[in-house]
Image (tube, rainbow, N blue to C red; front, side):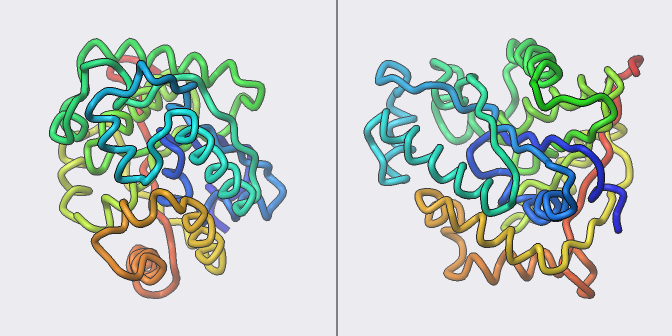
Length: 265
């Protein structure tokens, strides 16, 4: 058994789907072992029409859900169903997704570009909010996205993870999927950018929990056709990637220890 599949754990996902997509097998194994992992969705704020600009409206059309109230209802319903499939509860935080944060990110190149410097304060706020959650336990493991694909929200949550590491938490970064699946070079590019911010990867065999991960992904009916538009068989694609991660022997997921900020921890 991997050291990462025992003990208390928080799985932090920027959006409604990132944990099942990326490391649902590990979360499911922890749940099966009676360790009560919890999934935290960060950018899950209430949504009003005034927050939906032209770029956000275009995203909604791709999801085939256009009413602001309906967007949140649909996505939370999907997230809750996926969490039940994995066997863990989910908590939604009140921060707005990047596409709803005014005019900071108004196109895909900006959304998958550099994190705005002023948002580093938001990372510090998020780290403090996570430490104040009812689910928080000293010594627990915290899982955050590595930031493959460079989505600004994933980068922001990773930065929150570094701050948690600086405060003594055991933080691990998961391999963001499907970005790591359809653009493998993105993993190496992200690791090169992070440098010493992360340690050597840890491989976690997930065995039959792979099927649970796939079933959890399938719960996101509004998202699967969009995020897996590069394949006609998302189940086979996820399974093949997990097997490749496990060296062709058994399906696995990959995590990197997150180091504290320079001069801290």
